[in-house]
Length: 522
Image 1: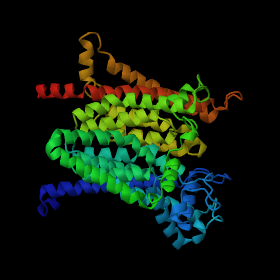
Image 2: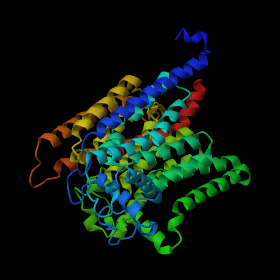
Image 3: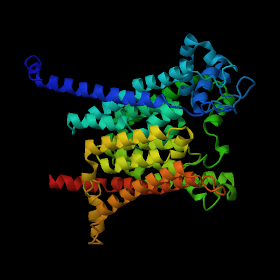
Image 4: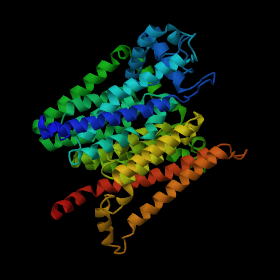
């Protein structure tokens, strides 16, 4: 380094070092991803439905061989009961693009009807490569740029933050083990977060619209985006620059949706059919074993059997809306990038816990914004991300991903523990709970034990997760309760998510007081 300093100015050397380290981190992330992808995948060798791997391949088959107007309709060539397309148009376009590449390599991979359940090493390599390329083009650059924008952190901390985010096991295991393209929608969402946080509001809005048009579950993040941008408009003044910004944002959103949906809005029935496929309310309150309120309550109270369908929809809507309302109102009144990040967490978590038709993989939508606050509250963020991965344990075990789960979780935990010294950052201030504790101590002077309580809860949480994992793997459930361990995993995870929902809401509601106290101290 000293020899090179003769030829390059110091700031250039620092940038070279940063990008060298970031490149190393990206290579580590890619290596871990590719290693996980070499394992089994969802539904491998399990006819007649196989699994999500076959779903992705089948969508390539359908989009390539059928006219665009038939993609979402049931027909003799497109049996919707066999992995019918149920994601927005951008997912379909992505499948079509992959299909064109597949056609060049081996037309048998996407041959209509005859390719159903196609399995070969070459095709597996191709499918894995499509996920890796999407990750490399969309998600990973967004993570690297976000970490580089954390100006209050040193270069080493920025690099460490990027490493921890890229090693988050939940996304790796679902995209490369189970097999999906969640990194595309999450990557677009992260570009959107970067855009609106850095005052590139139109580009940020465009990126987020692409995220929604790739996976409708990105609606979990839609209210924080709307409230943050609306708050910006109010702040600028709705009679001046704020109104101009509002019109520009509205035009950007409408234009992006029109472009994505153009082939499907020419006929009313076409549009309605796509919407029916995207929002299948007839499927019920929840599906499979998911760590949310409704699935956990069903252990004691069979809500799906007791209440009418339309009542279930109304109840889930009311609970979801009420749980996210305080954070959203505050974000409109006091828009800030920090408040925006935390509101993304609480809103996504509210949707996951209370909304209608939730899948276990939807916890990834909460994990993304939690990754973004990893450097601010490393202890709680690491804890949440471990629980989020654990909550998907039944699905991961179904796909024979036990060993990749153990290895990636350990790698992530070690990276977080060493990079952020998480066990040393459990004071009231470092947990972002100082203002809350001061407020409580006005009425309860002895309220000084909160950090110790949280530390003990973390220890109990880790022990519980380890024990439940061991029991699930080594013991056979009672014949009377074949889903016992899966239900326990979901129930325990749900309780922890409720705790995190309260915690993140406390941070949001006491944030302004914390900032004012900090300014007085400074």
